[in-house]
Length: 166
Image (cartoon, rainbow, N blue to C red; front, side):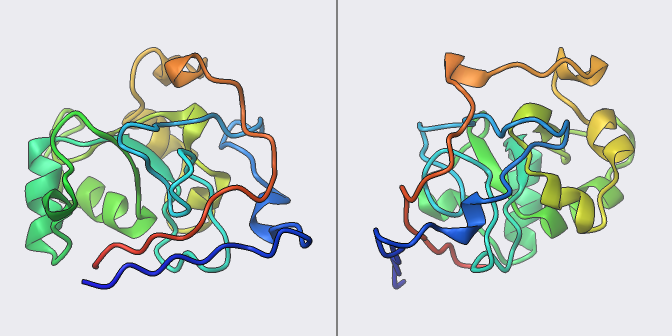
């Protein structure tokens, strides 16, 4: 497996940061630094032009989702992820899991943390209704919050790109 890291030139602002927002039209909140998640491995589920998988959905991994993802060719356990990890998920894979679910309580669908989910998920076949249906509590009521007590993201040039196998 080859790991490709690309860093933006320090004198040029990274365009992916220019429109960062959450599905609630607020600044995107930090999701997880342990494990370090996000396409840019900076802890945020922000999306840029390099992110062909649209890693916009902030979700809590379950055993069932890990099994489901592995059955589709993306074994997230191979990079050390396990049930309970917070991870920025590919929009298409989360949608597949949602469509495969037998009910709203089916653990194949990771619970979503809306305050850390990038609005680009809404442009990729997922509706706000879908996200709210599978929102982690107390976010189902539309409140949100800030995981790990961190402040919302301030756009900048930190981070690089770390590729997973798909």
